Length: 335
Ligand code: CP
Image (tube, rainbow, N blue to C red; front, side):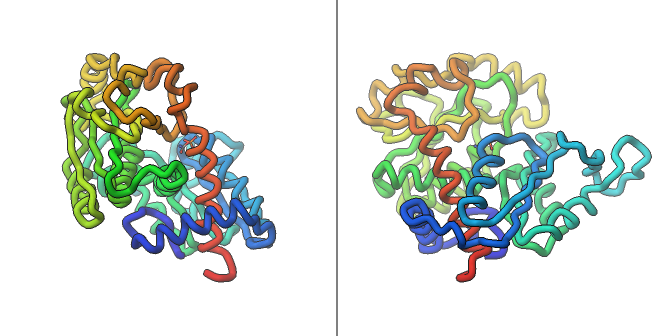
């Protein structure tokens, strides 16, 4: 495996093989599998789970890792192309990325969307420019439009909980958040659930429709995998018969890059905080999923988050296990 960027790059058998490997490594650890191998982790955006779970994954497989982020005592990094560097930044990303990659056998990169230009972000343009700088195997640790490690961990969580692939109802719900957040998790989670063959409902207020290319890709995946995609702004209708609700906030497509108008619109929907009454007409054992971090009492009530429906810690642990599988396939002797 030369890159782990998007579930769409893998057929269903390959995804199942990664999930089986994650289960095997959990049950039968291989503490020597990546002995002598080094993973570099470049965080141009903040993290808790991704940072810790990749380091833990590499250590559990016998390898090592190092982290670089702008918050460390490094030279200021310029990311803009074609710039005369007469300001504070002393180092350009065009040298920094290949140098970091040259110290390791694989590199993980995180760079969130700038959220200024929807077309630019939909094309994952910044991330493509970064990965175009390296020849080392690489892993997308979250770009403008993808979060494949989260998607694989969530797929595993659904399998672990025996949530039906075909016939299971998966609700991807927008939730209120005081800030406009990126599209990577909702867009790639929608695709993951569609690829798993689920009946997916996108539940969101008007103005927070996901961009048409995102919906189009999910509809095509659902059609190919025996699932379906619905969309509604009606919470009662959306939650009817749901097996899973996956909550996430995202930016308004209508006001993308327009902070003030996005904020005005989202503040009309401050009541979109997932709470127990949301589950009135869902399946009795309907689960609550979220990639974390999550704002308590804003995105979801404490009752739901601390209650039996919530599987957020299970999802977070699965991040480490599926990343062990990805690293094993990318750097192990059977690659
Ligand atoms: N879910 C996730 O990627 O968490 P972090 O942003 O903490 O890495």
